[in-house]
Image (cartoon, rainbow, N blue to C red; front, side, top):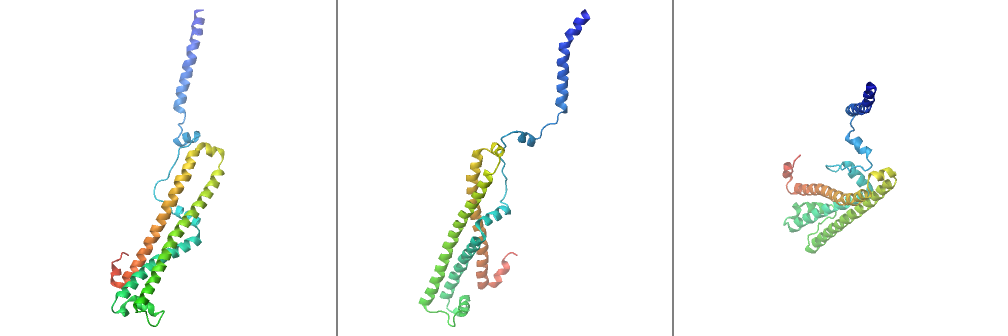
Length: 229
């Protein structure tokens, strides 16, 4: 009877001990979840951002949104700014030179007329034409840059909103509405301001280098040897 009492008394203590040992063993043998698996198990996902320079694919997509026709016209206008700016400078050199036959503009004018202009009113009229063309290209270049940027922003926004509305409800649970609106407002603004200005700076720098190298070659051809390869 005492043995039976002892056996009956041990039953409640044996079961918790076995359960505790099983839990301890199970805790050591269970595989830990990776951070990615833990994040995937949750509904709300952490926002990710890429860091570094803008990729070439981003510029390609932006240029495609602007359109090849607009880019071609914009390139002509920006090229005209540099061309007619240099023409104004070269024409002033021709105007103020005593021996005009030694200047580049004299030889250039000989291709259009047998006798280049030498009278003050004629040279003033030609200079006025160059200034007018330079101003026209300048206004067109900046206007087309703005128009192209607005068109690219509209197309990019339309494509983005179409893709967002096609997302499943699970995606909206993982990405809050405020985050989506922030991407539409802030990221699109950065794209409109940074990409457009960067494109203008790069293209303008190339034209500036080519235009002034041409003028430098006319004035001192040997100085081109100082340019880096």
